[in-house]
Amino acid sequence: MTLQRMERHQQVPVKVTAFRQFASNLVTQLMEQLCVEFEREVSTLTEDLVLYQAELARCGELLAHQLGRERQLHGMLENIAGNTGNLAASAGELGKSGSNEAFRRQMHELVEQLFGHSTHLLSNTVNGVNEAHSVAYNHLTLAKELQNHAQNTEQELNRIMSLLGASPVVSTPRSEISQAKAIPVPTHPVQTLTTGSPFPPGMPRQLPSPPVLGTMNMAMMPGTARNGGAVCGSPGSEVESNCIKCGNAYAADSIFCRRCGHKRMEASPSHGKIEVVTCARCGNAYADADSQFCRRCGHKRH
Image: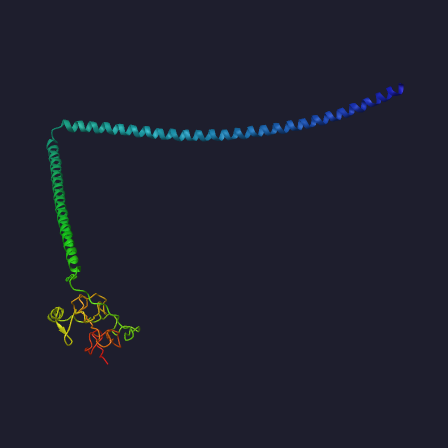
């Protein structure tokens, strides 16, 4: 028992020493943290105080400058008031005195003269504007009339062109005359050139001249004998019904094509076919068997 008590008495100082060390360390750390926080707060307050002091000094400078400007403005207002009073007094004195009556009358006359001249100029300007407006209206009316004339002229031109575009001769089919039977044209004597036209570029080709009106009328008359007593349109003579040059259909009693004036070919009595002879240069068909020159290029027939 005594030993245990002795051991307990020995352990007590050790525990007290450990607690004392822990407490001293804790107090030291707490004091250091408190000192750091205190220094930080003091420095922040000092900086704010310096900043506020600088702003307050700036406000004082601005107020001093504003007070100086207000004093200048008050002085200017006092000067203006004094000048206005002097002018009013001078005007009152001038109105009371009769020595300047002639001068005032002259000024009034000058102002009235200037006003009258301005009124005259304004009236002249207004009159000029009215005249210009009337002239412009007349020009507009004339332009509308010219436009109407142009439209009428265009309509007349269209009518003339439509009349010119219509065929001058209208072929009327005759029901009482039977059309001739179409005879096939042999294709072996026809020659076409693919090398080009014998005429230079830009030069119009020469079309065959239409037959004489009197000859055409005589040839178109029914019952006229042709080539040894053969009658055109008779059942015994078979003729070509379409023009071999332009493809237009012949009339029943026509000898020449009404479109290009080409002469109508007759059937050969021996073979029953049309003998078509073409030009060796341009490939155009000769007008008839007696033609010696090509009507398109003028080449001589061989």
